[in-house]
Length: 226
Image (cartoon, rainbow, N blue to C red; front, side, top):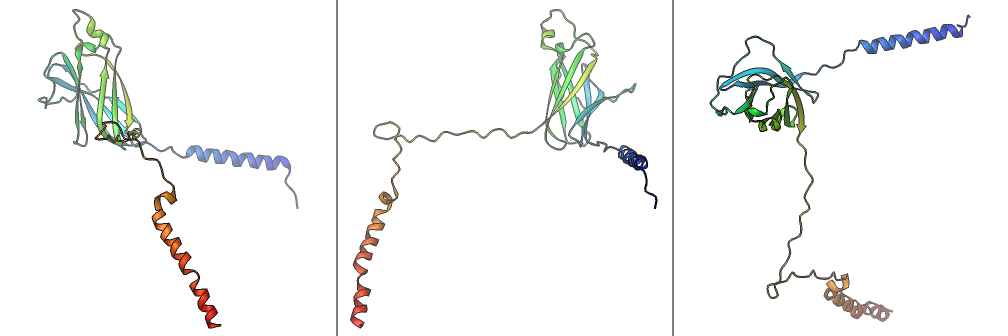
């Protein structure tokens, strides 16, 4: 019987390694799916709310923002609950599930005249895809300090989305309720801890006495029988 040489065994080993590597690389990575989606409407002009993008919460615990590039974007028609102050800039989030709508107003003067205005959405979640609060921030407060500054009509925004899961805070350590003496008006001092004998002597002494006076009787009865 012919024994394979070392070179042949090494070649077979390398081929098996390459085959395993190719099989692992061929396995597709799991694709995250959307579990919640919000349409983002911007108050580009007073009384006009135009959709600029969508916020998506994925099942892998991440969130992303996608801008829409249509020429005629959807408009928000129900503006009765929106801010009616022309100095305010508002963003409205509408859930695709029809359960939640968030109105997020800021001062319009915070927005910059250039193309470097950034906005940040902070989604507070109580579970996987369960949003219970949204924070919004855009622009800079320093822009409002400039005098005779006209607010931009259509700012270019860079969007950032953050997820903040609900966390249980530390348990507070409550102080004990102080007991006040009614006669002196001062705080009562705690009573010193007593020993076991000091607490239960009235149970122990009768039991000892009973054992002392009844312990000889069985011995005398035994002697009498003899």
